[in-house]
Length: 136
Length: 313
Image (spheres, rainbow over the protein chains, first blue to last red):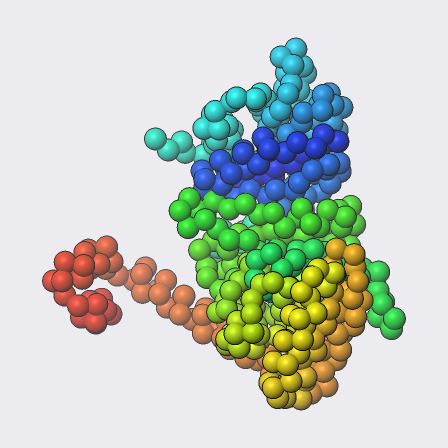
């Protein structure tokens, strides 16, 4: 509620229909004092980049369980650059094989989190990436 | 490098998004930019959409936006800006803004701009930034601006001040006749809608609201609040609703009621600004210790009346 409220877009690109993980994260970020724009299922990379621009978010969280992260994530990153949104930090959650993480990071992703990651870890990673103070 | 003001006037969407964030942060620079954009405002058709949680406001706003984008008989297509307000958690200060879920099929349309907004502690169904954001969208050239309030109960009627045309959304099964008798939200309706008309009970909700309106008598300036049925999910009745919005706007123009509401809104807004600035000036001018005074009041060492007298001396 202060001048520096962090705004986060949570989106599920691609075709898988499971959003429980995304909802758990959304709730945890809200409880950490962030404003979470939840866009729902089956978002295209274009929809995500456009929503990020209109909502002027600081962070995008992509939840991907379908295995299509190798194509979806670089596409989102490219569109963000095209729109001049390089400063937006992108985090990826879901089922991502360890071997794929270096490529995602190379494309500009700030962090990758698999199932079972404590939500506090994600909250701290977001605050850290934005240079926001870490309470406690 | 063009200024933010010039970029917004030229329709730069990222500049508009940035200005809205600065408005939300109460940035003094945003105040100056809005001031310089004022002459470009006053052109948009501003419509508030309010009602209890779960009546289908978001879906109806999305359906209305599609209808305005397409145009209806005698009314050419219009660009649409949407402000969707959701509540801020009083405990964490965070919020989940979920209205975009229902607006998915508006994505990709350059003639639509959707901004989700948290109420940030303000009661009344809107946020402190709503009014200024309407002006920013207006200055950026959006021809229709739809404001979706927080799901409200009976007393949160700020939208009536912000929007010259207010749609109140009801749906079947959200209250009995006595709910409709209570003052407040029904009284601010310029247009009353029973949404979810495809659901059981819609007819009886429609009938009881119809009876209420019949008793209501003529409202301000000879406008009789129409009662409509919609099923936002299928689009049924939404053209007729858009039509009613255009009719109300014409009525506001022709009766002079629109001018009167605009002046009222401007005066109320001016009072708020003066109150806020006087407080700021007072706060900056002295070394008053509000927290210490509050402690003394709580400890019953002085009364709030005495404290205020003391601080303003």
